[in-house]
Every structure is written in C-alpha cells, then in structure tokens.
Length: 219
Image 1 (cartoon, one colour):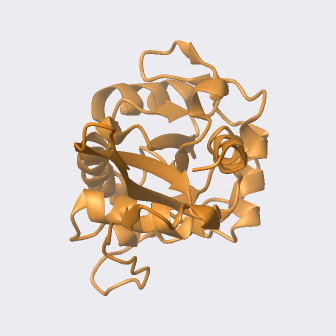
Image 2 (cartoon, helix red, strand yellow):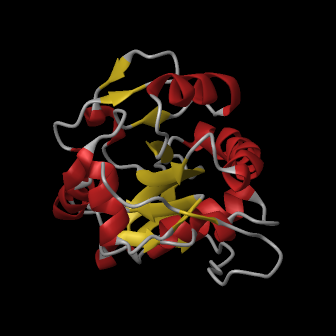
C-alpha cells in the first residue's frame, strides 16, 4: 500500500457521520460519551420505545447481534428513543438494552433522522457508514435469521470497507499475512492482496414480523 493510499484510507476510517459531530451521547449507565470514539465505525440508529410491544420483542435479538459483532470494533448502536417519559426510557435501557449508546431524551435529531429516512414505524434499525452514507434502512430485517458476522461484513462491503489479507514476504523468505480493514476505493492495493469473500447483504423484509406505527414526530 502506497503512502498516498494509506492517507486516503486513514481519512475515510477517521470520519464520523456529520449529525453526530459535537452531539452529546449517553451510555447505558448514564455517563456521557464522546462521539469522537465512533470515528471509522458503522453506526446503527435504533428507533424504538419501551411502550412498543414489537420493540420489546426485537431488542433482545438486537442485543444478541450487538454482543456478537462488538468485539470487531467496527459497529456501534445509537438508540433513538421514542419514549414519552424519561424515567421509562432510562429503566428500559438499563433493564433490557445492550451496552450501547443513546441520544438525549426527546432530542431534535431523533425526529430529523426519522423524517430523513421516511420512517413511520418502530422498531427500526438504520445503518450508516462513517461518512454518513446510508447503508441500510432495513437493518432490523437484515439481522433476522442470519449469522451476525455475515451481516456485519455485508454492511462493511456496501460501505466500501473491506477486510483484505496483505501478504508480505520477508528477507529471510518467510511469509506473513496481515488482516486489515481498508477503504476499497484504494484501487492500488490489488498487488499482493487476496480479498476475503463474505456473504452479500439481503435487505428484503420477509413475512411474519410486525411493526408499531410511530407517534407523530414532535421531538
């Protein structure tokens, strides 16, 4: 990989969705979290609320998915709560959610994002790339019945972030292989690179699951 390619890849991997810049986020324990630590990661915006039966059914599935992919360091969830009472929101996150992040209660960004993606029901999971590009507005359906890492790799590929294996031959004749996440727009890396082949992403909802209509966006 040339120095120029390293710079381009580094710039892409250090990006943060613009709507999260200078946005105050909170952890499950109530402590604040700096969005700077989300740079280079896929972000999954989870729209849901404790009063929504379908959300309460989906949250455990999302928690299981999150715990499976979190060790990769490439994905983080930001909850966009549609709760009407702050204490109910906090209790629900503490009791049932994964150890992910959330937007402030009734934050204006929740309604802004819901309108941007034309969301009219919850639960909903929207996945975006580090530069803010929308990767999937069907994240809830993407994870249904599929291996978590396959889903994550599909999202990464669509975001232009691929794992590659870089082959290095050392002076003593030994060969080492380094697995690295890169921006696939760096075309110059073809030499000495063997691309991993991950399962593609299917974003077609299948029957059976249900949603709850979202309340009017007034937050």
